[in-house]
Length: 455
Image 1 (spheres, rainbow, N blue to C red):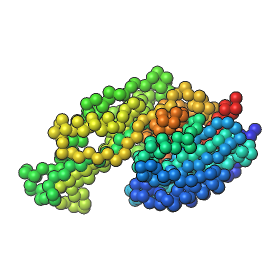
Image 2: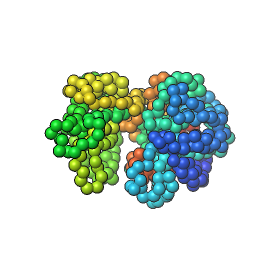
Image 3: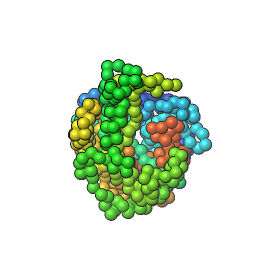
Image 4: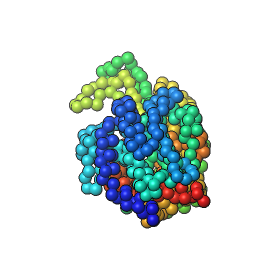
């Protein structure tokens, strides 16, 4: 059958695709630093054009980095949109990488490097899947579009007005989101949504300069002020203490809970890889997955104040700062949470804590009974020999809201990643076998989608 021919092509050309991932990931496209953006956008366009796409860079209406858009007609009705991004996270801390973050290396059946998993490797995988289908069928089985952002890792600024401005270009029947992951044992998953995100910088200014710590009885200490303010946000039992924070949070449905109960215990291996004996609050099994997917969170990303060098310096700092984020669940609004945080701090006497919003994303989710989920599930059987575990939402974030709600299309996550791939951390990597099977899954999704549209 033709799909088997496509799978054979993927097997035969896997090494060439991995070599392309290495070349692509040598570009240090760190959007937080603004590095190599234009060069990588041009490189991405060249990759797409080499596969027969009409591709170009589009500016966002309110600034931000270029979006690479591409399209190619297919042999049948229907259009699938791929959402990806060509930017990557900063590689820090550099001393924790086994090899250079922008000099990808293969070791022990894995490919290591910044972007090999999130998200350049997925772009190359999808292009290999499309080429395999063309080799097997003569043409693409359906229309295909790509929307590839250059600043997803800094919160996708201005993505909503961009989507609104280009509704016609981006119109499609369904979307395959940027990546998807396998479990430790290689079992596939299908994720159907994303949490929302609110990223904030909090700061307190005291004196106009650092002073001797002997003044600690008479000069305000911004580090203590910020510490107390942060401590007021969350209790030791992990419950967030902002008034009204949970007002929009809905409990998962019975169907969603059943999907969580079906998930295997991948937490044990994850925690072991992190050097931890147990999860937060000791949760396990279905309760672990429920908290991870259906509960919001507040995380301190970093704290800065005073002297932190070698030895002792008895100083009272002039300033303290923290970066925090809120991961939000369906129906929570980042702007509403920001207003509630401001009221919370003011009511407790922390009006001196300055809040600066750096990025936001709204949560979004595709219904579990959407027909496209069934298509992706059948494709998983084609590629993996078994059905995928359905996960109602990922615990991470992406600009899925604009595509699901504004463009009105279902979105499913499928790709080459796995739960131990260290995305955003040193030694980011993909397993070669996951790359192979994930690429076949993408090819099968397009094939199954095109078959469904012909009926």
